[in-house]
Length: 115
Image (cartoon, rainbow, N blue to C red; front, side, top):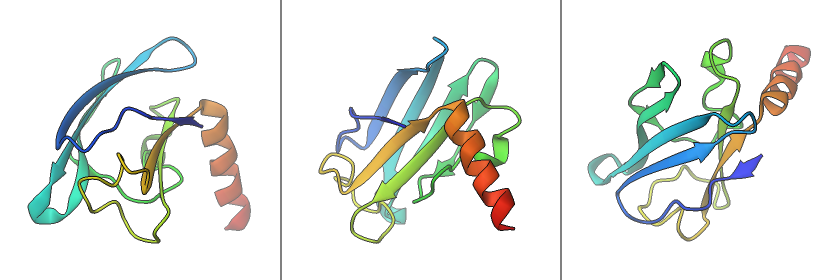
């Protein structure tokens, strides 16, 4: 897992992340105060585009697109709550991670064994 370190308390952010294979992911984040949450307003990887996904605590928020994406996105919070404050990522109360293809496969295998 690779920690996405540059998430600040700015309510609108756009970052380009480089994956292990050299491809890039463009991630646009927005904090919506009325909904008390962070959202991925746009995620782009090649021709794949995802819009309007709420960031929640999850080992892989992108699991439902596992047949289209070779990476995942995990979120973990220390205070046993969803990332609901504008400063959650800047204070490290919540952390976002990019998962490799191998980590996604390992998580999928874990879920399949448990079911």
